[in-house]
Image (cartoon, rainbow, N blue to C red; front, side):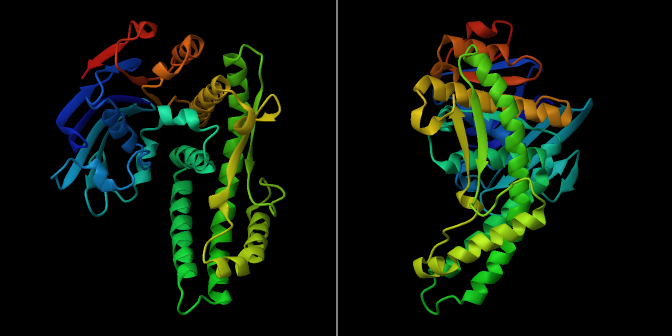
Length: 358
């Protein structure tokens, strides 16, 4: 996948701008506050996945403008496509591919997929479980758009159930909560299957990459952790659905009494071990950065395994956070696909790159 050109109108700090990209390494260079991350975010939005920065869509729209407009030309599987995304400050986004209107934003991921590595990702290993779940959700949604649709349904059900549990008068009935739990178990079983399979592939790839980063001195493994009643995350979905239903039932009275959702896939996690020890508790700063690098580049390899094309690699000012050996690893693993890298000064590691000055 190659991003050839993007134009922005009323997106974040941009009034109107356009950028051309090389199919290899692109360096976006400029002082802080020049819009480097905003440009990467505009590219990310054209994958159809929600922003990693904005809590509300209105934040993406330039001040005093009713909407933002993004257009891009991409090459996928040897064919050129034109993508267009209209982001209103309020209301539903509009999507077009080659001039044809699409109903679902995640349909964009058929034409553009990206792996993003930002400074915040360096805290993936030791940070809260929510960050690791977000990592899984955004990655799987790009290669399996149905996952994104299921996730949206699950989150909507969870929000409705949570609102119902908080209701003081009248108190929610057991039967009504049970009806929500049945739907959550049904959709949750499908989501769990996607997550477990992705984590299995991720573990295979990131183990090899982490070994390379550490010079063969360390091993990295990961596993998907879900509710205790699920004994085999690779079991048929009807089996998992029953096990999820059992778990939700065992927590039902406690949820009604506490007025909050205490159990479900929204509590799941990805556990990582370095040399057999929990990375979240025992990893050094250098080890956590190596593990974060391995995770992101493993995601890139899984995307390649799925489509035969590397996704666009977006690196947002992370090189300055890495030591020389890890910088060298990043530089050596940008080969074979397109990379778009932001930094405050030109980098010696990428002397033959396409330079964009802001």
